[in-house]
Length: 106
Image 1 (cartoon, rainbow, N blue to C red):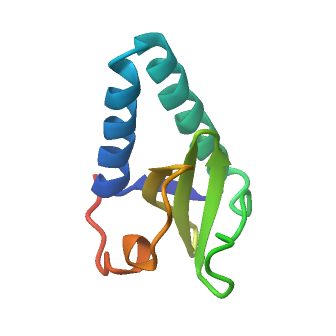
Image 2: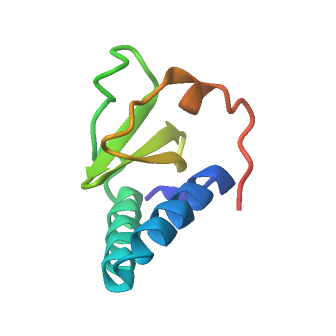
Image 3: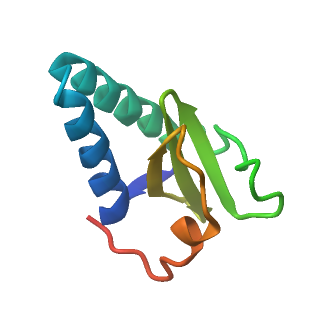
């Protein structure tokens, strides 16, 4: 079984997305944040869940698509690092994932 570890960046991304949605629909924001949390928790049992981001053919990163969001993660040993979360309509840039170097963990 893998251990899921959230970076501060990913938690901030999730908070920002939730806060934005909550401006109009607080209940929808709660449901989305809850849905993302539950699906990320599944990575403890199913590390290979998700796919490689189509923007980068050869990458060590994977993603879960949880509309309207994309959750990017990195597998290392028995750990799953949640790196970044964006809205699906945003364009993924390589620096969003790889510039982080050493990750800050919550």
